Image (tube, rainbow, N blue to C red; front, side, top):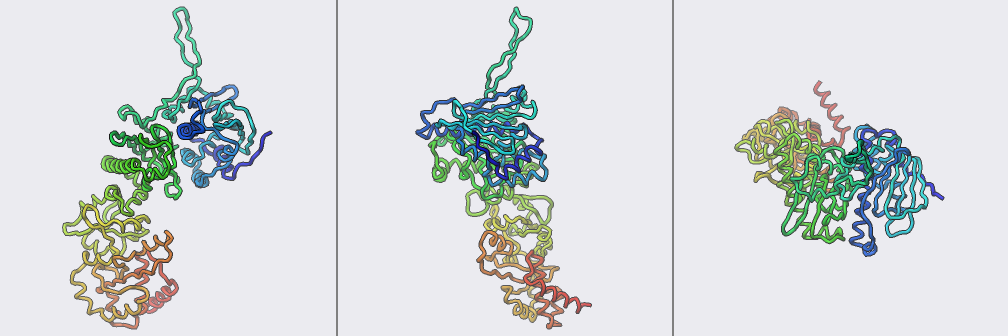
Length: 620
């Protein structure tokens, strides 16, 4: 007797999308089911090599495809690890992956736009409901005696005991039409998506038989034939692999239907032998900015699949990379600790990172248009590598691009340096959250006056990583928001000497009035038009950095007071000398205006409104 179960809520939502919305690329269901079968074979193969309980198991690793045109069924069978009853419920009745809701949200806006998302969100099995009204799954776990049948019409599912001679899983789809019972169609889908699955895929094929001399008509016979190459593409000679084969393999391992931007194939021989095949996607993975992102790199040892869940294989700032690492001299039962501490893996990781960064540098130089597309998608992630004291910061800096105060588009630090003034000492940047506000900041007035370019850094990651970057190509990199820039960039060298005596009284009063809110009030040599600007001491975090630190959980930060610099040549200060009674209101208004211009919030909006209203009344 069958036990009946209801689907998890997310599964119901997902199935509704599969059945009613996703028709743009239905054929990918076969890619997903074959990929699952390959994973099941990987798991059993690994256990047979590492677990004493499985070493005596005798089996032939393969995948079989069969179909029945009359009954409109398609069956995908494997001789892999198989599933118990509990595993059928866990794997097919619920979705444990945290990205499922995000997947549904992504598709609900434009459901037909891109069914390539299916595999990326780990819900590939359910894609079969795009083409089938009912699915039966018969599975027997290796080294067990019981087999179970899971059946569903996409509304609920049932599980019952059944008979199965061998371990593994067999999935039968009751198709909505006969499109996927066509021999030629199935064969072409397999070759398109699954040619380099490392296990043979067999299917009955009708083959032409040439007539003999005494026969007038040709004949046909059916043979069970291997459809795919079943070769480890990453171990083949690069010269023998076509671009299309590289692209097809990428689609197989990434569940992405778009071609990658770049592939990087390496075979290292010598003291340490390994092969790597890395891809740079053309689309953003759904979990790119999630803490619980999934690794896109599979680890093999001598072609034996080990894991696809080891984030230690590449640093987090390269988490967008998909591909394969195959190492010769590692134990098959490699643990996470071995991945972290093993000298061989450490060397493979270091060399892989260097290779990826160097190939990205070539990509940037040889195809700027495509590189800009890459950078638009993955630039923020790549910049994460600038944080800390890693060995690859210089290589990453060569790959970074920034907005400019003088030019449209994105520029590199190399391009910035090539355009530097002869007497310019440093590379300058301004950071914050609003590009337009940054480009019009009073902090840039002295730079504009001297026609000096400033990099505009309006991404949150810039605020975190740029204080860790001290120089590029032996040239200092400095923020314009810090006080020491005054020593380098001045609108008028004589301004302080000329004006200080004229505003001495106002300066003293402003310091007293604002002493609780600013570290100091001083005369600026960087302003030409604005009345005042906020800056920070060299060793103090600016406002954008303070906000970022708070978002990262550092809520107990001590209060950091800015410095208010005033433009002594501005007419407002001459009038304050003549009318000192207004100094209090004007001082507070100037501070709040400076806050607004730097992107900081006004601490007391109602007080600012009252002061502004009072000043307007006096001006009328």
